[in-house]
Image (cartoon, rainbow, N blue to C red):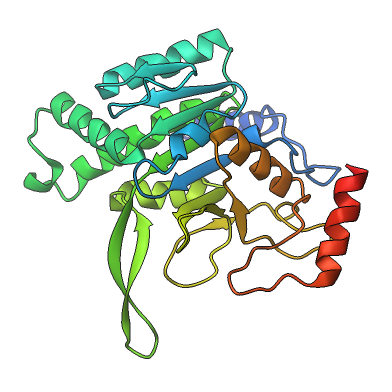
Amino acid sequence: MVVAKRLIKKKSATSHKKKSSVGLGLSLPTEPHVPTKNLQDYTWMFIGVKKIGKTSLAVQFEGSLLFKFEPGGKSLPCYQVSVPTWDHFREYVRLMKVSKKYKLAVIDTATIAYDRNLEYVCRKNNIVHPGAVDDYGTSWSKVRTEFEAVHGQIFSQDMGLIVITHLREVTAQTRGGNKFSKSVPALSSQADEFYAGVIDNIIYYERDEFGKPWMTIRAYDDYIVAGTRCTENFFTPNGKPIYRIPAGKSAKEAYRNLVRAFNNQQLRTYLPGEEETDDTKVKRKKFRKNT
């Protein structure tokens, strides 16, 4: 009798397991994935020194909502909210999901956003700092989980994301042992690791020796951080990879140039040191005439 009950119990558990697997309704794709052609659908990181135009460029994206974690931005004509605490951010993200008005979230800055998240988790768990708690990393894990969870709510809405951060200098080393200074995002290790996994495009905002602003989309040396995961974008019409994009004299001009480069309409790579040939000049005149 006891053996019979055990057999029935085992059979019931097995049946439930099979039923759950079938009930997921999964299927394999029949067509290859087609990358989106909209800038707003991708995730971006704008890094650079203060006051260079990162936020002004970010709010040019259609349907953007600026989350101001730091003071400033009052002069920007855009949709924006002040975020003094992580509780505010959580609630705004919830309201954004209900509203369905916005297509893209702008976090300014990601550095302060992570600090607010850290404060929230410490207050919630009644601790001073995760580093002061001997719990084998459990508190740090809670900080990471909370940070990723709220971002996940943004992604679940099929929204784009722009994170803005300043620069910090770190000492890097070549294989030969030579040390040099490198400009990297001013982020904590947890935030940096998370964004490295979810960001599609990193734009390094810089000025050249003449003070001209540039948006670097592909790193051209070891001293800066930039890059794109868009395999079909940011190429010249003849297929060369674009390295820098002129930022122009205004945020609107910078956005227009960014769109052109994204759509493979920028005629030059603007790789530093690369000379413009007469052939390129002729192609530019024909291209502008046709567009």
